[in-house]
Image (cartoon, rainbow, N blue to C red; front, top):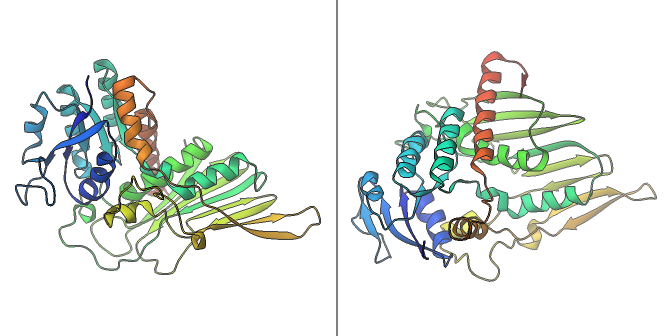
Length: 348
């Protein structure tokens, strides 16, 4: 296969336009040729040479397309990915991978049999604050871990008319929207938990869930994952407690906001956080006093995702986000729903 890889995005909404497109543009080995959107202009605003197609199946019939990126509504992921694999295309699926774990494992088996690359856009593995947490854990900065908290809160008390994420559709709601990020990060840090408990709520009285808390139980500590839509006050993004100290980080990684603002992800300072947003490490010294220090946030790097996809297709490099890992995330969501329905702790 020659480069650059000819690529199509299926579903050219906010994610496809503001996140995937600029990251693809920044990768020399991938070029965007087509987008699929059911309505809107017949051209891509501010771009030339990109074909706009209404039916995704027309994209799959184009032999020149090597890679398909699926950013359509969640309940369409499985069918579109299945059809793309059958058409011989490599596939990137935006999170969540699928609605059910059975669908995920079916796609994995299909990609394996067809020798095609299949991966999921778990981009927040390359958030700077998450990379900082990984670094602190590897350095034993807080000693033996006793608790980890990961929160992704925001405030929007009005429902968005017509927004599919807030409709009663399979895979809609905040659990499928934000939990895949938080679950994937926790699994990367600590592996699969022994047990979990979940509380999932509909606080704004819409058609689907808009708040959740999932507790992972490990041997000797727990990880608490939560997100809500009615939290106006700033809350920590990460909290890491250990026997020797704690690390607390406010704010979110700046890359998504930068992409939405049209910033070039290839710029030299891309992914670098302002010093004022750095997290704080509290650590006990030998004297017994608690010392407070600012920890420089590791530079984030969403660019790694598509560079790795290109390398996997063109060079056989191992894929960073293995589809099997993304399938485990979906299975955890299923167990969280079961835990909430039964009101009990569930073995993983």
